[in-house]
Amino acid sequence: MGSKVADLVYWRDTRTSGLVFTGLMVSLLCLLHFSIISVASHVALALLGGAISLRVYRKALQAVHRSDGANPFQAYLDVDLTLSREQTERYAQQIATQVVSAATLLRHLFLVEDIVDSLKLALLFYILTFVGAVFNGLTLLILGVISVFTFPLLYRQHQAQIDQYVGLVTNQLSHIKAKIRAKIPGSGAVASSKAKAE
Image (cartoon, rainbow, N blue to C red):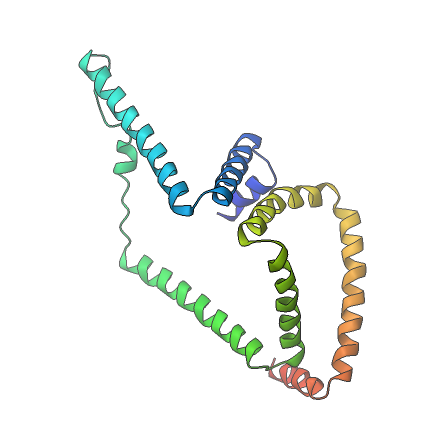
């Protein structure tokens, strides 16, 4: 799954990446102007219309004895979608692990286990209030899709320069973070207790 996503965002198969990118952008732009119910209904009608047309075409070919009239989607209809007990348990365990991990992280942040992490989250939410005043969610989603299909490719082409600048910024941020931790009372105790626990 991960390799297929990497192939898409790095444009290794230009045709597939172009189709996926175009499909996502057209869908999101439609959602900007029409309700989600209207867009979903039109997409479903287009898919269903295409499937019915193909099925009727195959039946017409059978009537003139040029085809056996088999359902063109039979291969997909024959796919077994049931899950074994082991698969169900494995997926349920993976979901439960993710939920517990997310709950632990939220507890850590919102109950101020580490004040610096909670302050960073508060700063992020504060910045998002300004972003939300300028953009709506769909606009951010469109920008996200464009970023996913452009930034990895740009990074691969200019990796050395980008890594150099990211290294400089990371060093500066770690120095600033260390200064802030040194000035906040109690944060050093939390950090040392975490280090002992690890």
